[in-house]
Image (cartoon, rainbow, N blue to C red):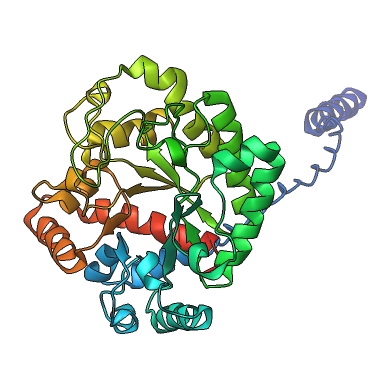
Length: 380
């Protein structure tokens, strides 16, 4: 009996041992996950600045093709109908006045006439004269007790001070008439009294002439008077191109050593315009009158870096008597054509544009330069 009891207890002990579950190992708690930091937002791009308004471009874009071409002409002032032409759809770039426009008129009559042109103009006009002093005095010969003296005489008497004082007086005198462009200073060199250009040139010494030209340009800029350097690339000892052709056989090196220096000085001083002569100068690369020559005009624009208005000498001169002179001048790169035959010259340029001999881009380029000059003069 005792043995059976012991056996039963042993079985119960074994069963209890088998039924016990091992304790599970403690599980450590994971640290809380770090909260994700959102990236900083990209800053909003700065708005593009509004382009600066360009009043010159706005005016150009408002013009018709015919009106753009009209801006390329500096027209000899008509004897009558000047206000009517200025008010028309073919209002030219400007009027160039000569002695006949002042002779037999009082100062007030001359001023009123010019004012009538400007007030009627669809596009503000350049109003120009040749008032160099000395032998070329379109206005002062009629309305001053003594006409303005030549630059050579002034410089000899009082140097740069006399020259700049005279320029300031001249600018005020011309502005009083409503004139905004004086086709001066003469940048040519001459020391020979027999030269056609001698009386109009300030000196035959390149450095002296360069200093004089720069001083005059700076004074004219300060006075708000448009200046025009002339007669590029230097008139030299050549004959009068009003009455016939002139051929200059000098080498390019001669021009670069002397004649071009006053023009370079004037350009550096801020001259807004340069007038190109009709002299034929083969050294620059072709046999055409300078004002019709891509080589001469290209030298001024590209080699010298002149960005302003390139003006032809008067296309009515004998030296420019070639077929389609106006078209050739624009093709050569001139911006402003002095003409006594506006109607025909305008029609020829328009016809060349329509036939493909000129591009609209070429017309716009020159018209923009002319309008930019007007804007710089405060005309709009």
